[in-house]
Amino acid sequence: MARKDKYELVSELARRRGFFWPAVEIYGGVSGFICYGPLGVLLKERIIRKFREIYVKPLGALEIDSPVIMPSKVFEASGHVEHFKEPMVECLKCGRKFRADHLLEDAGVKDAEKLSLEQMMAEMASRGIRCPECGGELGRPSYFTTMFVTTIGPYSDAVGYGRPEAAQGIFVEFKRLYEQARKRLPFAVVQIGRALRNEISPRQGPIRLREFTIIDYEFFFDPEDPSCPRLHEVENEVLRLLPAEVRLKGSEKPVELTVREALERGYIKVEWMAYFMALAKRLLEELGVPADKQRFIEKLEWERAHYSVQGYDQEVWTERWGWVEVSGHNYRTDYDLSRHTKWSGVDLTAFREFKEPITVEKVSVKPKVKEIKRDFGQKAPEVLKLLSGMEDEAIAKALEEEGRVAVGPYTLTGEHIAVVKAKREVRGKHIIPHVVEPSFGLDRLAYVALEHAYTVRDERIVLKLPRDIAPIQVAVLPLVSRDGLPEKAREVYEFLLSEGFDVEYDEAGSIGRRYARCDEIGIPIAITIDYQTLEDDTVTLRDRDTWGQVRTAISGLPDRLHAFFRRKLEFSELGKPI
Image 1 (cartoon, helix red, strand yellow):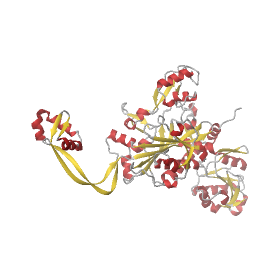
Image 2 (spheres, rainbow, N blue to C red; image 1 turned 30 degrees about the vertical axis):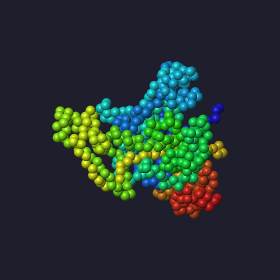
Image 3 (tube, rainbow, N blue to C red; image 1 turned 30 degrees about the horizontal axis):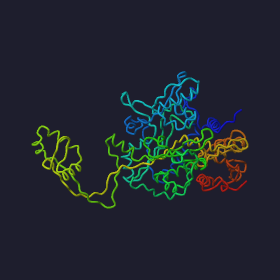
Image 4 (tube, rainbow, N blue to C red; image 1 turned 180 degrees about the vertical axis):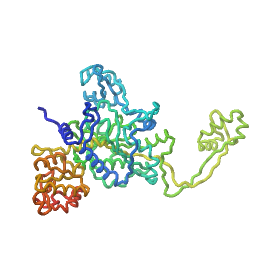
């Protein structure tokens, strides 16, 4: 019998213990959708809280919750309607559809995603690639839009899309968010919520979903002041990078550089992006993924999203799929705000105030209507219309240098146009902020946390989740189900609940079986109520990872446990060793 890999083991545990399972199972399930059970919901909440501790609170980031479905114009402006598509191929025998580039990659074709449809067709034919399900012949590849489309209301022309990312909800609300940030740069906005991508053939469980939770973090800054004043906090953090320069030479061996070195060598273009990449490494370490199981791989030009001028994917090693992307880090420049300004007609700029006001000369021109009518007669309205579409400065410059200006097919002189120059004080100027974006897939974070926590000790599963992301913090267990121990255990259980802990009560089965259940779902501490508890109000605490035990008073439990889960105390400091 073949050995089960970590994905199979984690998936079995997830189904059995209520982390996640395939959605709509009673109707056969549907690929690309999963359901989170009670423990999965809590795990995701813990990871979100950890993210907020690292990314949101220290920088005072704003958080919003915008609609999942938005009008098509939003995604036309953002470029998603044009660019969000994948090459699809259909089996002519069984009718199943597949990603053409994925089939080619499985057949050993490198960088298949940069091939045209014709090139993909030629490669599939030359390699004899057939349907992986039934062996049938494959048709011609075509592009498939991977956004879910719908109509808003009863009108078929009111097209809407399910958002494929949460970022556009931030960009279209920039005007109000800028006001909330007191009209100061830099500032950050985060959105955590559902996103939808109509994947052609999702086949990696929670790694590739059609509906998933995304964390999009948009950091707006002045492009003329891109320095990161917090860089000193991370400048010595070592990142394992695979820059484009290294990849283009055919190497897959990461270079290990400090954040400062990566910036000095030009591997990372923007200080803020390097800062957030260092935070991403720390976040994954906090989720239990060691540094040597992480890397940042730079996207090559044809791999980058349409809005990105530089992008790095943070990848984590998994047993079944190898390196899997868990976050993307992109320098989006002013792409999104510029596009939405143009498409909406609304000013989405920020105001940069000068240190000292400056005096500038403002040039304006005014047509002499009477003289224009005199010289151009019936053509005068056309002349005036053409003139109104020209820049005042260009008109004034032409008159000053040449004594005349061409207005379409007509030539005007100073007799037809009055030039007025006035000096005024300027306190600043309007700019379009640039954006650095860290973006995380929450479902992938949850999965890799589970995979890296999954261990086996003495043939028993021990889910060694970091203590501050474990779904259940404490279990309360009466030693036996008699002699007043369950009643005392219930009292302790209610006491800890009232102190804000996530607690589980369990009295079913032997104490050994209950310890094993606690280990399997990752509960860091099990509290046992025994006969001594009835005598002196002390309890036994058992550590999930070492199976060590200490004894402490019930009255001191809240303070000690709070300190433990905040990493201010270690388990051995919670009481007297037994």
